[in-house]
Image 1 (spheres, rainbow, N blue to C red):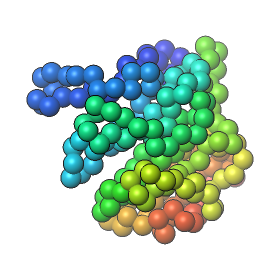
Image 2: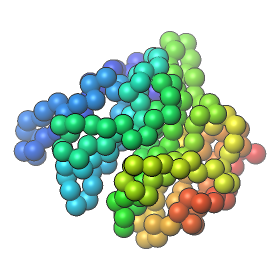
Image 3: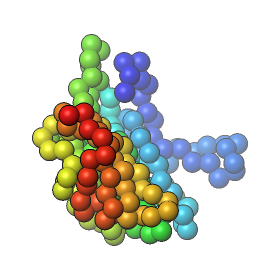
Image 4: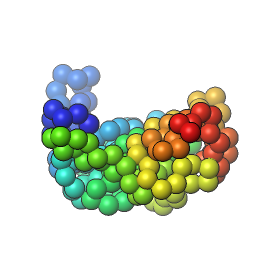
Length: 185
């Protein structure tokens, strides 16, 4: 989040190849990091919301719509200071998603990145319940995390973690355990 960041105005949708657009909610979300559309149902969408760049807000977390954006429900929420910076879906099972929580606030003179609230979360039921993944990942103050799922082997994940002992981590068991591949040690 740079100092000259513009305020987000929610989610927009086009059903005609981008010729026209309609506002579909989350107007107060601020920064939206990622949108994932269910591969078999375009009305089923997830939004990873970082939130307002310059201060806390309640509209942070993972939001889900099942009706193409007419209504949204917050399915993962950490706090008014911690949003979701990345979201990845298992390519073989769209009910499995991974979300990275990031505490961030932009001041005019600096950026505050990281807290003990940050971390990586997993759902196996489409977002109804979430579990924090921490076996082998850095503890304490953690910043932004990027996460991805291997398209060849969905049990293999990579996470790039901003932390004192951060770096690149890999899981071969769907996030249950992690091994560092390269760290800032």
